[in-house]
Image 1: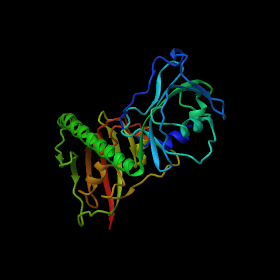
Image 2 (image 1 turned 120 degrees about the vertical axis):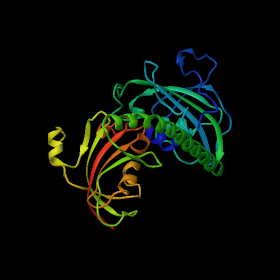
Image 3 (image 1 turned 90 degrees about the vertical axis):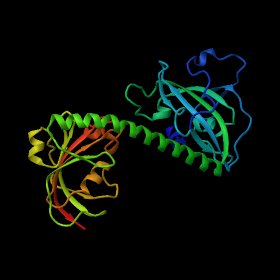
Image 4 (image 1 turned 60 degrees about the horizontal axis):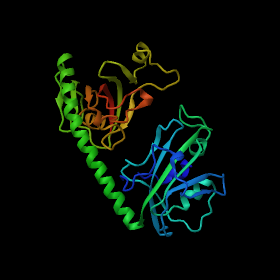
Length: 317
C-alpha cells in the first residue's frame, strides 16, 4: 500500500477532515454502503459517497489517516503542506485491493476500512506494530484539479512551507544565540559572528590565497554537542581516547568542495573563512547544522547546537 500512498504523498491542509477518526467502524450506521474488493477481499465502508471522478488528465486530492488497534494515530496527511494526490485512472488495472479503492476514489468520498499492517508496511512494520495487526484506515477525497492547477497549488504550498520554516528558524536563531553567548562566556571564548548566525574563533591563521567557492579543502575535525559530548572526529587518536574509534573506518582529513552545499551550512560558510593551515572552532546554531531532523546516525538530536574543532591541512582550487 505504501508504494502507492507514498508515491502520491507530495505532502496542504485538508479542506475536508476525515469523518469518524475516533469513533471507529463500530459506530457506522446501517444505511452506509459497504463493499468488498475483488483482490484481497478488503471490506470498505462509505461514510459519505462522492460523485465526480477525475479524468486521466486530472488529479484527485485526498487525506489519509491510519490508526493502530489501540486507536493511536500512526500516519496522517491532514497537516501536510500538500495532501496526498493521484492521477485519474481509467485504464490501469488494480493489482491489489488498496489500488481498487484508490483508483475508485471520487470527490466527496469518505471511506473507512481495516487491513493488516503488512498491507501498508510490508513484512517489516515499524517498531511496536505487528505485521498481522489490524489497522484502521480513513480516506477523504475532497478536490479534483487539472495538472496546471496542481502545479500552481504545490508551488504555493511549498512557498508557504519555506516561509514558515524560515520564520521558525529565525526565531530559533534568536533563542540559540543566547545559549551560545552563555557558552562562549563560560569557556572564555572570543568569537566572531557572521550575518547568518555562525560563531567562529580563528585559533591559528592559515597561509595562501583566500578560499573560493568550489575549492577542495582537506579538513581534520572533531564535532561536539554543546555539553561536550563528541559525536565524530577524523583524528584516530582522539576517537580512541573518546571511545569512538571504529575499526576499518578511514580516518584522516575529509575532502570538501566548499561553498556549494556539500556540507551543512555552518561548515560551508565557516570553511570559506579559512586558508591552508588554519585552525578554528565553529559554534553552529541548529538551523545552520542538522536542524529539526538532527542526524540520528551520528547521535545528533533535533535542534542541536554544534561545536567543531577544524584544521585545514590543504586547499586545492
